[in-house]
Image 1 (tube, helix red, strand yellow):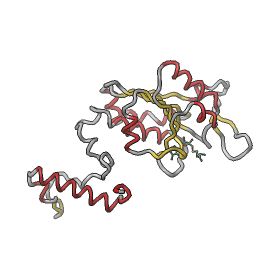
Image 2 (image 1 turned 90 degrees about the vertical axis):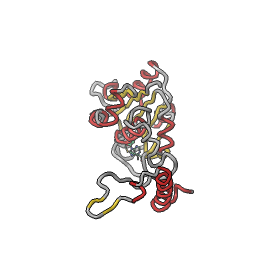
Image 3 (image 1 turned 45 degrees about the vertical axis):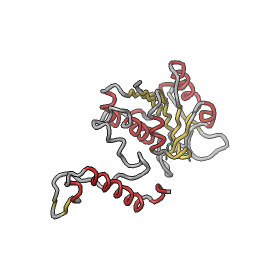
Image 4 (image 1 turned 180 degrees about the vertical axis):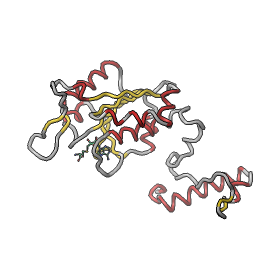
Amino acid sequence: MSKIRIDFLSTLPDCFSSVLNTGILRIAQEKNLIDFHIHNLHDYSDNKFGHIDDTPYGGGAGMLIKCQPVFDCINKLKNERDYDEIIYVTPEGKLFDQNMANELSLMKSIIILSGRYKGIDQRIRDSLITREISIGDYVLSGGELPSLVIADAIARLIPGALGDSESALTDSHMDGLLEPPQYTRPAIYNGMEVPKVLTSGNHKLITEWKEKKSREKTNKLRPDMLK
Ligand code: SAH
């Protein structure tokens, strides 16, 4: 198993550290399964004030991230190693889902570019970006949270990242269904009882029950997934 490398390009690099250094993301790095590298686009600016944005040609509200710092940063990285994907997170991209996370988790090195302000110069998208991903039909103020969402979804899929290696496989969406209802001790809490079958010890019945409940729940909450 080769390890995954993710390079984040951002104008607000401070957004990343607390999330990357907590929980499964921290553990995956400690186990040497994944490496994160954060690049501050201001450090790549050829402008003496470190400016990375400018007003759009043709007018309009807001500022855009300029070509120069992004081209310089990505070209430097590409000279150092091959990248499987150079991703721009944007509300215009393909909607992120579990299939995409599974696919990305098989890659070796990925760049994820976060936009800010009104977005980025189109020429970056035309000549450097290989894939555009949206995390949902709403607009955030920057690409940092979407980048972290993608990194988290990838990291937890790497074999060994989760304590119980099976548990990623039984999550909702992995098999096109939501997961069944789950319970933990005590068997009776404030008069509310855990379904009898789960405490029966009969594994065949338990598996059947879980499959049935998975289907019922998906049908009720996400009928679109069964189509
Ligand atoms: N003017 C742009 C929105 C800019 S929002 C437009 O209309 O499409 C600023 C940045 O936040 C974007 O460049 C993008 O990197 C990020 N972003 C905002 N919403 C996002 C979403 N739903 N998914 C992924 N990235 C998003």
